[in-house]
Length: 318
Image (tube, rainbow, N blue to C red; front, side, top):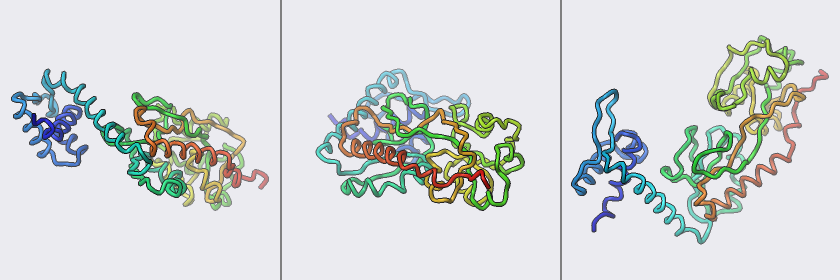
């Protein structure tokens, strides 16, 4: 029985079937499309049966044969069990590589300034950080744990709430000295910086949402600077390019350090979305995952009770 020789070919076949093509499968597996095609053909030759039909309607795509489609659920379950089995071999300690996925902005503004606290407590755990805006397939990409921003429901994954969030305007101290910004209505005519990193249809608050809460719906919001990275949104405000609608978790350290000033602090708008620690339920007991999860929850609790944001807010008595 030579089937173990074809584990790579089976992985190539499964990825090609999921992506309906060799190119996307190759990108996932970090090989060339030609290599994926060769692996699939070698598997077909060994089995003595084709695994794909080719369709030329619209864009060229691969369509798995009926027998291949019947086999795919078992193959995927087998790879999941194999990955879990490998993890079980490492259960004796928290050492090894921990793969963590977070957004680039969350990494820059929250995780990286604190990660040395975890590494000091768990020096034998090497953290591999995957910063990606896309929702990754944890099993396929070898992800151990991550932090996601949303409503808290991701099929097949366990989600524990990490932090709630508030939305509020911020600007640089220099801009505040130059402009009269005593009421939300004073934002009319200012350069508004929009965070478009999350689709507003998912419940993400926009300038229009905040201005309605602030009873200033007549302030125009169609124009302004739009940026799809929350960290870059804050940097644009720090550099004096305008007034940004900030996410409190991202802005907390900049406000506490005086790089940004929170405007109109009496106006509160809680975000409908929150941050969650997310992982596969079957991996929950892995020591290094549990250690990182508990550390994240502890850091969030400490940061939430520090009240650093109140260090710099707009003084309306000016």
